[in-house]
Length: 356
Image 1: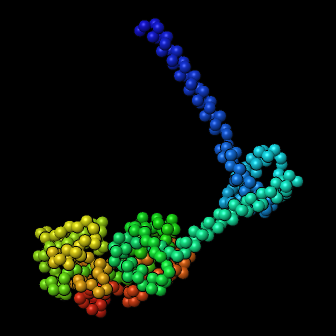
Image 2: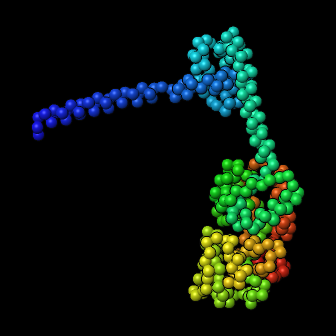
Image 3: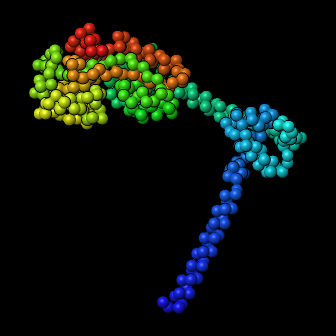
């Protein structure tokens, strides 16, 4: 290797070592600086608020509780303020805190400033609460938003004509997370098995929807008792994507009964199928939740094959529910006084109770 090249390499290596040493020393120095000291150094408002509440209550503990801070954090604020002003504001003796003469003078100047700021925040928060008071916030999944809520909201608005609704469209865990974030007080959804794994929530059933064959009223299978899968397989069967299935066990129903050849139309949503039924293109297996109270389509029960779908409303356990949400719950119950949806059913409810 060329001697000059070797010397150049050694020189660069030594310079790199020196840089690494300097960086390590800088990191050690920064680590010794209290991050809270750095924070409060340039945060005058927070320091003054800390002093104001200590002076007002005569206690660092009460000031910390009011500001939702720790006692050491408030003490750091006071120390930083005293350093900046160059005077002692408090006397600390036997756990008691009293104001010095300079502290009293500074406190008198702080009072109108801090109280004006606190009033500004309180008024703004109240204004936002007043705006939200005119809203009923509801979390619901796709099917509920499209088929159940319109009738519930209509009934609710007849009772509370000045209210507005804000609806969050969410499924399962996402809906529960929105409850945790207090986006709404109630989540309306079909019951799902994993729901019992979340003990921080309470869920109450309010209606049962019947698994049904949805057809035009003059379809050959409409109203037929104990209609068979083999009979249904003779027609174009409309199936929704698995993400939108409302009935457990529907996705593999025909396979479990060894019926492999079926004529089907797969649709990647839950609203479009009824248009195909309306047009006479096919038949649809879902719950009668998808029908309206005065729907022209009919629902032939399939309880001999599929389970009932329970709908529940979910609230946070131990969380006080507002009167407007309580009223909405009453409306849900009023829509289905017997706890059963009868929309479009071709059989009397009494004949179906043996399956409940």
